[in-house]
Each structure stands twice: as C-alpha cells, then as structure tokens.
Image (tube, rainbow, N blue to C red):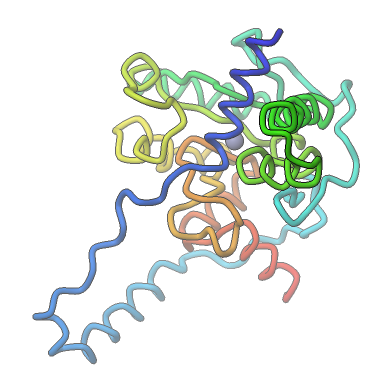
Length: 258
Ligand SMILES: [Zn+2]
C-alpha cells in the first residue's frame, strides 16, 4: 500500500511540476523585425482563418464542461455508480465517456500508438491520503509546523478536492513506446515532442477530448504543460476548442458571454 501511495504521489507530483522549458515558440528573427507591420497583418489573418466554426450551442452548465482545478473545488463528488471501469480492467472514468475513450484508444492502436493509462478517476479521499502522507512526512522529517508542511505540500501535490481527476472526465495517457523507453519520468513535458503525443493531440478532439493544459497557458489554467492529460468535453466542443486554440477556461467564458 505504501508503495502504491508513493507511486501515486510521484505521479501527482509530476502532474503539478511538468516543466514548460521545452519548445518555447520560435522567436521572431531580427530580419523580420524590419517588416513588423506585414508580420502583424499576417498573424492576424492566420488567426482569423483558424476560427472555422461557430460557437457550439453547449451550455457552460453541461456535465461535460464542469470546471475543477486549482481555483475551482469540486462541488459534488462523483458517485461510485457513475463510474465505469475501462477495458484495461484497472482505471475508472465517468461511464458517459467510456465508449468514446475506448474508441479513441482503438484508433490509437490502429495508428501504431497503443495507449497506456497512467491515471484516470481519483477520489477526493485517495487524494487526501496522498496529501496527508506527504504533510506528515514533512512534519516528522523536518520538525516544521503543520501549516508550513501543508503549504510545502501544495507546491507539488494537488489539494484534495481540486484535481480534475476527481470528475472522472480526465485521463493521463502515454503511448506504449514512450512507456517502455522514457528515461526519467513517464509524465514529463518532453513527451509532447514524441510522435505518440503528437498523434494524441491531433486526434483526441475527434473523440471528444482536449489537451487540457496546453503549452504556455499556465496563466489561464494554473497548471503547466501536460501533453499526457486529456479531458472529455464532448466532440463538438473539443473540435471547436482545439481549432480555435482555446483553453477550457476561455471556452467557458465565450459560452457565458453568448
Ligand atoms: Zn492528469
């Protein structure tokens, strides 16, 4: 049990500390600075072309658009009866998304990128166990106060109640090749450069999933780039969000402003 908790704790820790040092967008060359006006015009028109579809008719109140994160505590815990176990016989998700996930997984296998699930649904209680174990470890190891130990723990482990994994709509996946060959951490931002991760990013929306924590959007999502964390929002919403290069937070804002 201790081992399991330890592993889970590492996974959660990784989820919160993924580095976004890789792949910063290529900066404009100095040669282009002389044509700054042209460049900004081009950029604008490219952006306009990207907006291909009208805003979906979804409501921000839909079950598949629930917002849980560092600033949004889960309001109501998912009932056990609302969960389904996936075909790996190990991980659980909200049963309403199970068939879409399985279809996505089958497509990935066909494309040569069989998926490995690292984490899916996590209860608030299991998150609390991981969190408290870490707090107690810090207190006994360093003799610091409980408040300091909690603050320190929050830096690396999601506070119980604030993880999107509580919703049953989030899954952490990598492809088998990466799983067999990663050098340091299975959940690492550098995974984003792998062919499997690129396939995931491109194809997940067709099955209703988005890359929930894109690169360089930490200011909006509160979480650094996580190429492995996909979130179900429904097919139409996922395609719209992806084509328009949005985060879930920005999409919800658009819906509310309708
Ligand atoms: Zn995750």
